[in-house]
Length: 419
Image (cartoon, rainbow, N blue to C red; front, side, top):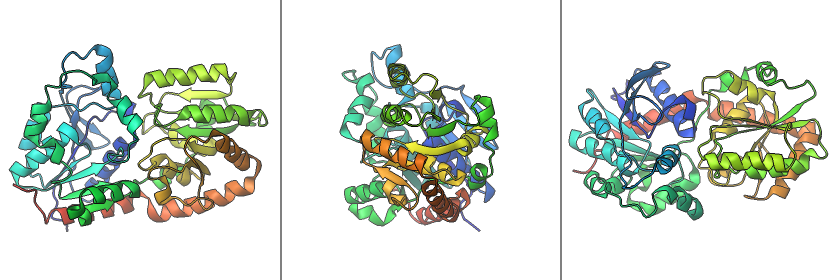
């Protein structure tokens, strides 16, 4: 029996309408811990939600007021920071974490000031904390880092003092364990913190295999009025320049000229609204209205999501930055062949030509060729999807990931953060 009784999961926000990879990881991790008798409440800000506690499928979610600690932020800048980037400060979260009874361990899924809060509380309570890196902390391309800082560029940052008091810059350095979802990130973190190399773990994301494997394609096809002859190319990812859906739209425009029965479906919440509008403009410019369907996000528990995967003939992830790629696992579980960018953590758990087709970042011409290859050769689709399904069932079901996560926690419990 584990000595771990309760684990607090600390993250930036948790709302079904803005669901992404981090939310999926934290929620499913909490579910797996609870199945093992370990309480795992989620502590986060009240971005896009009300303060207070809510049960989400049995997982307690506790939300607290927050501020973005820069002077002279306008409404537009705050809205952008809520959707992407921005390091909030929440004194209510700090107090609640400090007072939470029977806490064995804190797991922070964010760095900066919220990570500093987790570090500070753990040190003063004499318990360990674990830090996860979800967004490519050391592997995010420089141009994307610059774009994320645009809303507060040039604004006085009054939160620096609190970041210093909380030791925000030491969140990773002082953690009892660091979890990376990509092997490339794991290598980068080990290089940055060589004394902690053995405490830097690669833990891939997971998937509820049965949920996607056993879904029916018909509800999705019927809900959006697809014809029996329509063949679907699917991309599930937030609408964001990092995910590079524009590349897919442009490649699909060329592909569609010789494939009149195919339709492109993009599903994802818009975390960069300007990019969403750019996609809509490009669809019209390329005369793809009626050939491209954009669905701005589906709730994580919506049965239409696994149905969409099962309805697809091909799944594409054209991302320009990807620490892992949970959607690839979802497509594999649904039996859909995948085309993805050879970037970030993707090559670390996939094998080109065996369970996926990979193309180089930004190469729209190659993406068009890969679409045609899978559309025109059903034997390729069958071979890739069969190998991928074997892989996902053997390695990536959440029950297996939960076992490995608990092992990391138990190892971390033998260490304490420095005083």
